[in-house]
Length: 411
Image (tube, rainbow, N blue to C red; front, side, top):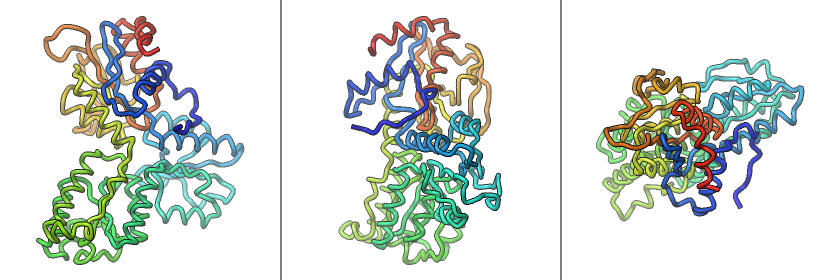
């Protein structure tokens, strides 16, 4: 039986708990990616099969609140945001937890002020080997309240194994993201490592893998994103790909396949296993499930999509990208962004700005019937936040009184 975490009840949702419980009973193997439909007459919500808190986030929240409960009167710090959700981070701060750094690594509180008796919580993204050591040098055990996602640690362990087998670790992720910085730090302890952001950079790397460009030029193409003493002439002959677990799973798979083909082009199919490590088992199940659920959601059709999550959430942004390919999509962090039936405030990722869109709650096209709204959320988004959004939209559409009746379908 899957582990049940102790999560504060204010993160739970009366609406979604009924729906998710019903789907769990009907689909125990989690293979049905069709959405759940909450039909309120004027508005029909289509909810992604999988969304919201994942295993790693629930694990992190349980540990963080346990740290607060077990250490009354002590100074409690987080290295940086525990997860990329403003409401979770704000609640922790309201309980006295202070952040030592911003997500970009810049300092908020000097480490020199820390004392051995202080409590430091490691975020779900993990942290670098250097940071673990720095805290230990102060006299703080950074592993007492280490909320690092087990799937992130799985990537670290696989990278260590690859290093022991003589492979170079290629990390697909944003080099300015906490998780990627942490993975790079752990990987480079035992293996040559390099970070790439996307397929475009994978193509640039493949040129060196195939031996089509002088290896000394590698350092100019990937400045600051390779491990110390990286030898491009040697270290790109045996490689394997891992990822920042919140990246688009299909993109990581495509990058891995592209580099695999580059290896074949240079060394031949018969020598593949000697030059390319199989790392498919490192992909995060929750990231993959949430993205697969969005594909199922989009295939069901709709008029618009609402994607909920922190505006600095990598995994949420990828869900937005998938939805934007098909229909009008509004990336919002909570119900307060829904101003009225005529206006919604949301993040425009292309413009990198929060904008307000008018006349948003409407049919997409000339077809009759209820407005169909596709709904999903990032892995760090509480169900309570999505619940409040459903209730707000239902209220402005004058159909909130239908929610209780609509839930009977899932009873």
